[in-house]
Length: 200
Image (tube, rainbow, N blue to C red):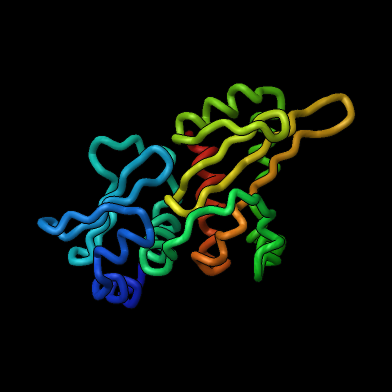
């Protein structure tokens, strides 16, 4: 599933200065391309060439296997994100409008798999978050705020395994997330975040 032509056409007619203001990306008028920061990487997006490429200097190994999901989400972010900062209020994806998608069939996020990986090693979890450009928070046994896209922060919280309970992992959005993007794209961003953590 690649970025469709309609999305590229929609992006190509937008005013780059407006896109930059809304999405906190940069634009190179000589090359006709946007520069988008995602996690620890930079991506160059060319509406003319209809290409999305990581910059040569970027460490983008986290992208393995989720390239198409990322590309679709990135284009929709440039088209639809609003000029509004985060509220700093964290919410469960299920609390967003249409958030029941996160609890249906193949849309259930593989958070249990991620929790198992770090069940006894919160420090390794924090290190992985740091490698993805995240910052440590104070929730649970370990937590990080990550930046898949500039206006869409995602927080992962780990509760490690103990004698009574299995490990748990939660993924939270800022409460403004659904003001920027429709729920299906937010699901894609959540999946990208989990898979990036798996890949790092």
